[in-house]
Image 1 (cartoon, one colour):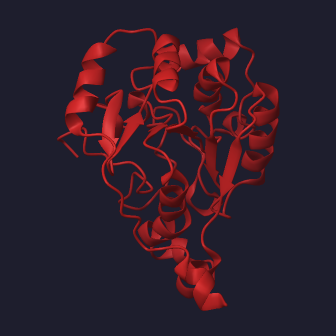
Image 2 (tube, rainbow, N blue to C red):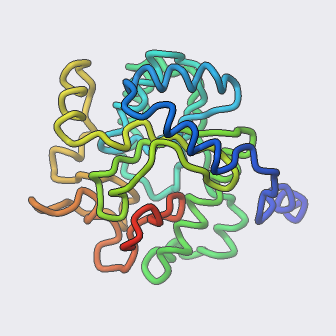
Length: 250
């Protein structure tokens, strides 16, 4: 029975590309300088049934989710519970989903058989953070996204030097990845939170500018990149879901 259950989750999900780079380039040209809300509405309409929003329900997640909810509250919202999350994040997820009226929140978790085989002690983060992220976040998200051709991400260019040239549209494993907030800065995000009275993640007030898993997230000092509190002390800037390759310096 265990072997049969394990077989249902393949190591690699092989699918034909839904989008190619030329299509992402055309969309970047089409929406250059466009209003963010209008762009999100257009893409959700054109990709109806083929697109999901992915959210960590982190420090700034409310903005993207509000933009989506203003158009269609039934858009699938994918949340990967790595089982290393802050309790504050799980509570915030529920509060925000309720506040925005999201009706299609999908929670995905790591495969328990893989956890037993590769992280039986739950300490893989302490000696192999890349492997831990792949096991607990990258692979579950890949499974979650399998039915979709496109997805929305909440990344912003100002969050770290490795994201400074983030495009609005890009191709990731053959899917169209949309970054509606790519060119938003901190002031614009703060203004949006205020304009729509959106709740903040409770850890933001404690200095957490970016919120991930408990063992690998610390508060950020003034002047540091917002993501500098992630994997502090490691030569690591991303969990593996996103690539820093947009900036040739990295």
